[in-house]
Length: 127
Image (cartoon, rainbow, N blue to C red; front, side):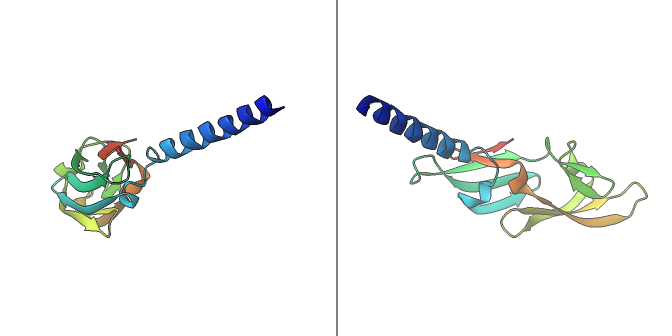
């Protein structure tokens, strides 16, 4: 009986550790990163490593992941910076830009970066 209880407790412990480890890979980068800024299409942040103490400065180019879809920022495509100006942040996790539509008009638009950017052991990653 003791062996069964110990095995059960070990299984619960391992499952909990796996759930915590996966939490680093579910977007929400802004929860574990500070000093977040954007220059052109490059996002820079100081992000916690998995140990929770060490911080690494990391960058990611957003241009391969975000597109301008007729004046609206979208995760479906790439090269948004070619047709968007005044790119910056609105808060800690929202990218803002003024993007050109097909008819030549310009729209102010936003996209939530926490939807697809994660802090993986101190490095910004797209997922």
